[in-house]
Length: 513
Image (cartoon, rainbow, N blue to C red; front, side):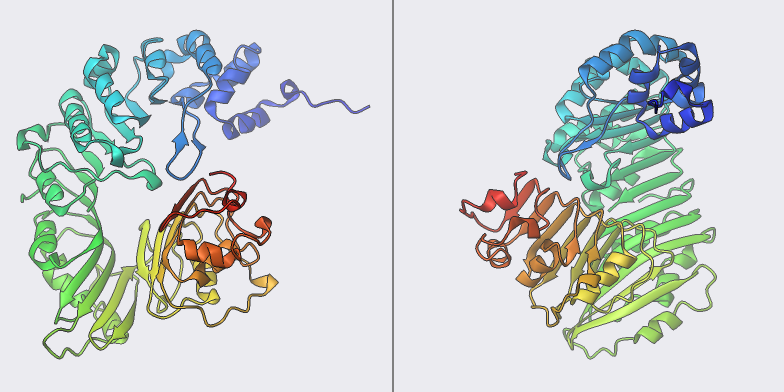
């Protein structure tokens, strides 16, 4: 007779593998106090020194929960934390459990704290009134991660106040990630209304933050951060200690030569630069390797690594410009050691408007914006947010290339009002986007709704958010009469339409709304 396998009969090595596959909260709740052998395995210092007291659950792309069951929380706080408190180096907690966990015991070895999924006002109250948290931040914490739930809906005054509170309270802080823990919920901070004296830290060496405007970036860099060596900012003063800069600005600017490049040139001792820029120029040629070197790179003698993605959108208004060819662009990078492998392509929309895209390889950015039919493909495994735009239609084979070369995208926006010419899909041509959570088709022809929402064409197992025109929905469903099982809509929890739509059958296609 077969017997059920008892987990206690497994060897230690296999038990450790199983524990590593489980969430640490489940491990502590299920396996501690079973017997001495399990306690030794589970409560090993290497296992519990980085304690994550959250369980992340997706309701939709922007609606996530991190809380753990109250029964589980009580058992861990009452029976387990008192056994491991002096071995915890890093702790991750969320809004509803912070008080019970922090007040359960002391944490003498704690130096890293992550505060996850907090409402702004609640976090402000804790930072202001909770003496246990304030003592930890002022006396122990060197690494701090902040995540504010629905941060972009919070009052900017609250998030600004929290940022300043952290800088003033944390006397030993060396690394701070402020509201940039999760790709799908970045918060764009407005800090230029603060006083300059409030932006000060004598210990901070690394800061990661998203800023709403270039003015906010300049304002931040005029703060007093005397030890800052690494700044990761997604958007005049020399910073001689700054060695690493990641500058990401996903909006077009025509100030690259008067503001952006002069701003970066002030960092005279940069050793590594990551640069993401979308540039508008008028009656001028594309940005190429020669211009980049002469206007920017030659001013930084210690730079040894340059990673970039630059798109130039040119407008011919009053002069007759002979635009560079793609071969000219690629030749412009030859002969300078700072340039490693690069790629480029040019897309000409008309005799008055053209676009050139240059980027270093391997590609290392989360964003890939405004690519078009001229996109040559390649390996883009870091990209999570993709936008495609063209005045010529995107055919099925274009999206097959995208799914193969950019396999991990989580958000996709399509801007193209031209119908597809070739719609002969075969059963062997199923396009796969296994990680896509948000799809925006508001600026897309109805053919692209068919391309992405019909299961026989595209596989979208985790589509949570859909932005689409009512007309497109009505067309592809034949006014909501086609079998609902044919569509990638059963898991959509947030539907955004261009106007109100009244149909008794709508919920059959979107049962999770």
